[in-house]
Image (cartoon, rainbow, N blue to C red; front, side, top):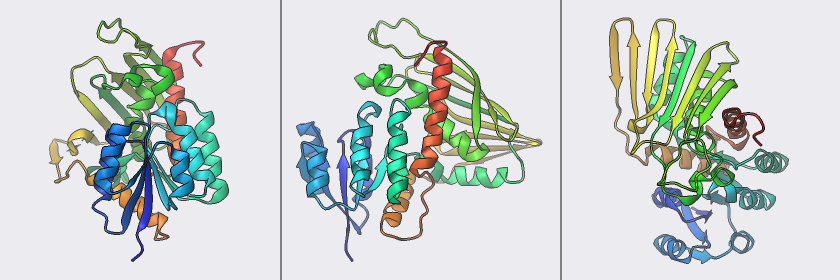
Length: 323
């Protein structure tokens, strides 16, 4: 069996998650890590038995790769991902796709023109409770969808700068918006509001600290999404979906689903390790890159629709004149 040769661009937390998962695939060999951080990149490369490259171009040109994982902050992700596709290599891109729409659109065109395999890191689509929710909703069309990401401020310095992260809707709550698309269909934001809060702990922040977005789905259903990063930890992250006679509550960080029908309540919490959705997602990507049946649930062109949605919601929340 010839192993699929994988390269990774980036050496942060999410790169370590992917590397941990890939290390369990007998048909994958991680051969290169491209990182400007010699310390974290060196440790990651050593753990994988891979070569460390200080520049992603050198890795793309010299490592004979079958697939590449781009695990970079949104402000730095576009050019490396485009370089991957221009070399005809299967692309795994972490979310979000960028801080604007132009760069990701260029990547989508490159993927389409070359017929490449692509996958974007919306791993929640692979949760067992999400599969169960989709089954339940087949006969009960959603009428109201309420999403939320109420939590803390991540520690990365770039996260609180809009030109580097895109803000909480684009960088973080994109998971919730994407899951709503996956379960309830396409939507458009109809209005949004946001507020910045003076925070001594984050004096350089220029992103919205709270937002509220109203949406209308193509089906006619309505919904709303609330976000905040003012708390000390995760408070509520997930979706509530109401149909005629049924309500679903997805607590995604806990991999739990609560189903209410009439007066009956059912709680589903199948055993699921943290890595499980990443394993299913990465396995689907590697299989497709190997020419096996494509089971990828979030190819780049689909993820681009989520990106357009969160950019539009963020602009509305920022108010008139936002770029």
